[in-house]
Length: 306
Image 1: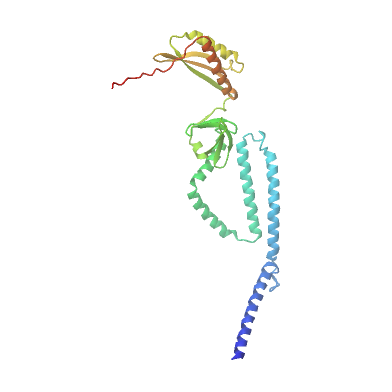
Image 2: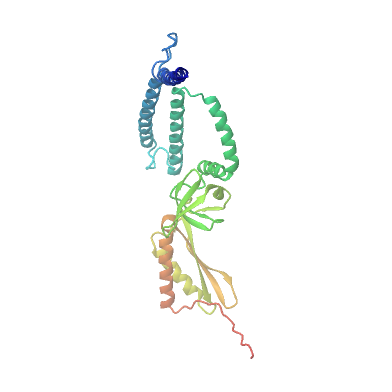
């Protein structure tokens, strides 16, 4: 009985020893020496392949950084040279960067010997599912490409998106959104698909912009005095484009108790707001000095009998 028990324990420990021996042999063959059992096998050990793949990945990162640095200098990302549209340059740079990293990781997996056929099938199925669930994202990306190719505006243009009710200077056109900076310094992010479907007013497309100041003046006031005074204000400003378009002051409309006087001239678009504010101030001072009265809406108050 005791002899049988001893034989059973010996067989158990022998099986345990065989298990660990086979386990470590498998690790040794897999990582270090594939030809340990079969000298006809000439493939390199996986440990060597793995170390080489990691070194390749690290060196690849540094090479990509160098390529991106050269690319930035080549397209002059922060300057209006070679490619003038900075939004397009940023878009091109980011796309090129992501492509380089994707290629690097694909080569890394190929060096490790990972079969990518099944992975590509999984990725294709995943992309289909993601595409169905991220239709808005894809739409915004496609709209970004449309904006960059059709160029309804470029970086630094002052634009108005009528449907969004927002206006400002374009800072950047990104993969999914367009960034604006309003005149009061706020940053506004707008989805690209909203922009392609919107009515866009680009105030920077033309170097000239028309100033149109409308004045509600009492009918009893002398129009000729108003006309002469406003024209003197316009003509005294050196920024008014007198050769491009002659400044005009005219009566555009009559109402019950007042007339609307339209004062028009063209100025450089970059100086538009400064000139408008200056004209408003000087016209107000002229009206006050000449005792010219502006008209106001009359409100009738009806008394209710108690």
